[in-house]
Amino acid sequence: MNTYIYNAAMHCEPCILAQFGQDYIEPEMSDSSETPCAPYNSHFQESDAPDHCDQCGAFLENPLTSHGNEWVKLEMELHDTNRFNEADHRGWPMDVWREFYSYLWE
Image (cartoon, rainbow, N blue to C red; front, side, top):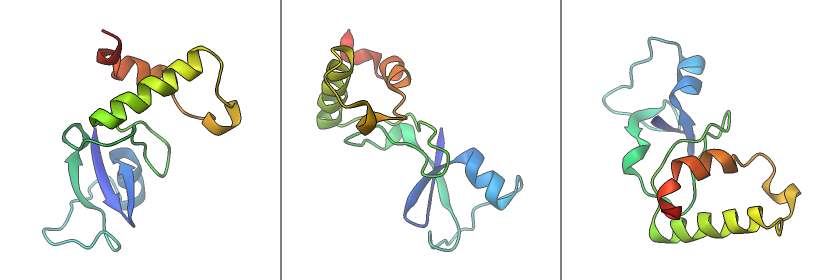
């Protein structure tokens, strides 16, 4: 999924296009506080946790660092054994993470 940086936050392509118009073309030189910076494919940006759009919450399908892999595995274990606080994890798409990061359980 293409991901944009805008106002120090990550945004999915549908949110950027909804805000800036379907014909939005990222300028060659850009300051992310004024216009969204280039779409970059989040498949190449490792993170220590799953990334989500700061506007709509869509999962950005990013790869994880080794720390991120361990964190997701721990969160899934806590979720599966009902040992986490629901209020702290409300809205996290655990089923989507489990499917996307399925390699963690192979």
